[in-house]
Image (tube, rainbow, N blue to C red; front, side, top):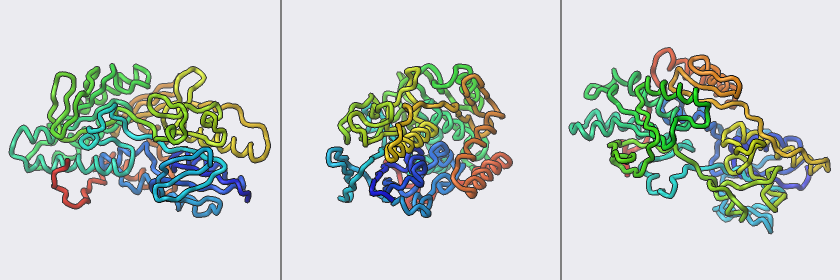
Length: 421
């Protein structure tokens, strides 16, 4: 093994793909992440909506590389990068030297300058976010069951999702199904079928990155499930008691934010140009401007396609970038010519609407409905890590399909009935 040290910050799709691509390259790798697990983020909303448990979509990073002595895994949070000294600083005071640095630090929710909304309108990026949302959703029904005031009860049974991208659409569909089909027989004082699920989008249509015909189908499918879709109406205020949507105030005790993301502080660490979302504007080989030994991938990077459109912030794109950078590093170490500039290959866009419909956009081929849902499910099961996870998720989906019962409806935190700020 050579002395070349590759430091990878972030154990998401891009970071793991890069580490996997360097297997056998003869380099030392240190993988740093703030959490000890890799998260299959495309199914995170299913944890938030009681379909899957946390262990079905997350795996300990150390376990993934237990048989790779070239990989050292550290649980830590990066606070700064000194590109001159070629060091990375961690919050615990540790400093790591590197020969090559790869930043795959992802993104978090963006509140467009209204960060004070976050406590009442959590986003969905981590397992902690998912369990927080799940807790709030389940507690809303529990509190409504005991609430005597009709106005407060109605507010408890109103769920507002801000943002109609894939996450917002998927959340709205499942919450509506949960309220209208799964829970009605379990409560005595409330009729959960009267639950309001409000999906708010400032733009003109849901799922704006999909073809218009698929977007229209998704909206109709949501409305069939009982979701109220409000388009062209921006949210101007989020409070503990509700949401201001244009000129209308909607009393709602559960709000979920799915309206935007902002990148990690990587651009600030490196002191390089960034786009409006804070993503590093990388070179054609995905290196940071003026820093050939520093690569930025995934949601942290702003990468343009040949048609001038940005590469989407989705898992396949991050994996392609991680694999590409691994090839660049290998070529440099072996003295071979560098690979051609990175080129993103779009494999299609997918989104579900509840547990029986989905839309898929493969470009020329567009699918919707039941068959699209099955293809969506098979694709996601295929990309899960490990046979156990694939079997477990498949069984959970089959059980819900046959029984209509969600399997992860547990409220486990202490003080479950305490009011949240």
